[in-house]
Image 1 (tube, rainbow, N blue to C red):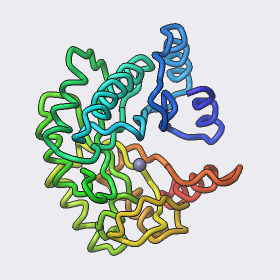
Image 2: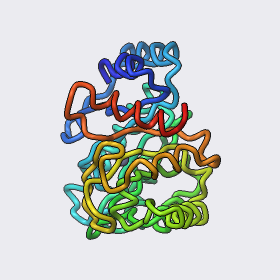
Image 3: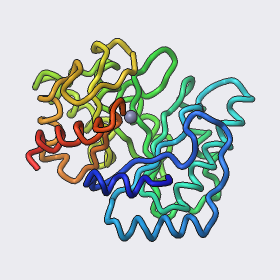
Length: 261
Ligand SMILES: [Zn+2]
């Protein structure tokens, strides 16, 4: 969290995604109420919207290992509580590796009795490697159907969709992918996109993000996405490598230029 709002403002962002704890460690403490209130006030004044929180990468709510599963339930509950405390609009979660029913039941169990406020949980599409859930839009739709009654939606990552097998590069492939997404999840249920180019080939199931325009997707994919009239109200977030002092500014400028804004 720290200086995230300041950093986003310095880059002239409209929205931002943050972690509320270290994304690769189990230990996380609740955010003290005074710190949460200060963050909420600062965010309101900044005009940055939406505020997206990305959940810890270690969490797997779909797996069979009981020790790991118990830890995941606790960690996910903490993610929900911290996201609500700081007034985030969305919490992004990877559906995990294993079983759809287990994933759905775990989300229900971990969120029991929770006052969601204005928070919505977004299940992110994944490269779909091995037993990992979320490689297909159809499976994301299945997860949403299982969570009927809860405030849930989907976040689409362009790199993940490509390495999972969706041909976003050709105009025809893009149209087919968007049609499939609309038919299985519904575009209204997709408020956030992660804009990442991909280092790896289509259907390689390898999750390696690349700078915009420098990977296998290329600039035209992002021009098409950002200018798609159906997606005008969506939030687009970069998760490209931060491998230099101006890396984020460069990718952001590239997206802005492609969007014609
Ligand atoms: Zn992502």
